[in-house]
Image (cartoon, rainbow, N blue to C red; front, side):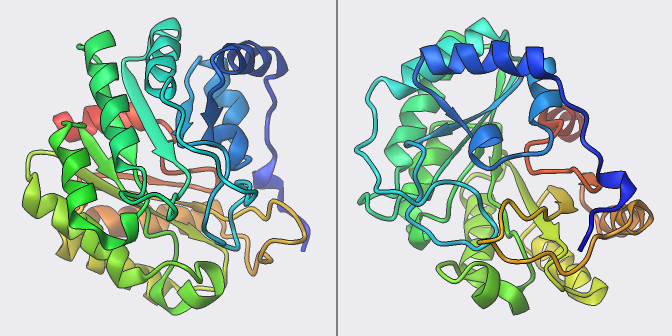
Amino acid sequence: MSKPSWLTIKSYPQAAEEVQALLASLNLNTVCSGAACPNMGECFKTRTATFMILGANCTRNCRFCNVSKQPVLPPDPEEPGNVAKAAVALNLHHIVVTSVTRDDLPDGGASQFVATIRTLKTALPESTIEVLIPDFKGDPHALHAVLDAGPDILNHNIETVSELYSAVRPMADYRQSLDVLKNARQYAPKIHTKSGLMVGFGETAEQIARVMDDLRRVDCDAFTIGQYLRPSKSHIAVAEYVSPEQFKVYEILAFQKGFKYVASGPFVRSSYHAAECMSALNE
């Protein structure tokens, strides 16, 4: 299936080189590079990046994701400090930290999130922090530890509709992901919650609407929705390229359902224009 004209990506090679050189000097990974994000050039041009902690390799086998599935390494104790150094160098006012999924670790890597949040708060006390977390295999203690560190936004992506989990996220569970967001809201009601969907796997508009309803039932504040783009022929195929007009329909519907912030469009990803989301949630 050929890509439509609206999926043309503009490149910013010089900006990308500058930010990538900084990250490489600190031995840091980004989900921008690891997940082959289409917005990488644009974000690097504005000297922003989403830091990916706990290494570059993931223990899950999601069929949409470009992140490496090679053997994992122990968490780097220098990583939290290096994230802070990069955030200072980039003068970030809103910092987004995500991770690979580390099912091999007893706490799923929650302690590395905690250390990173605390280090960032010390280095950049005026900046806001958003964490995009895995499900920690449903462990509430791991989730609560991250929330106790005090991020401003707790993001956990639902990724796809429940009917497609077995095909798209065979090692994940739709209800468990909803429970992460529900638990976060109940445990730390002052921390904003956020989630996102990719479309183009063959889901229907009605199924997407039901996901929105499920997220609102757990009082999720912010919602992102974007087009799945196949990283390689070994990944699940694109079933549909959703038009910009349909993304506008989803945006209107999501606001009608009560989300405080919505980002909907072909290139939208969970941390795309994340600072705008933070500003909207603080209004």
